[in-house]
Length: 153
Ligand SMILES: [Cu+2]
Image: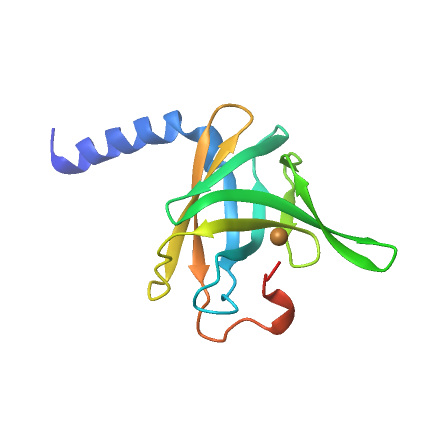
């Protein structure tokens, strides 16, 4: 078997094994700039699309650079802005969920040596069907974010 055929065969195998995970895609994800260099928490935003025929829930997340990654939702209650912990993020079939500064977003807590000089970090997600998917979030530490996108809570 020549190398091309061999690559093709292993690619097919790869695709069939990870069909579900490949159906959950990130469209432009980024980690907001920290307020200070010593910030221990930052928020991450983006749009996660579900290309599959079934609703999928993200039930957990992790990163090499944070002690934990949580899902938060901003709620406006009697004029106060509150952060509410969300157990999972549901994405409808053929739909998408936006992670935004005034809605549901990711929170990287207990940052550990965030590589701010790099362009991207990966965040792993656990899906309710048992699959895992890894997405790459751009690190925006170069005054690219506006004030309202900063996550300082
Ligand atoms: Cu938050």
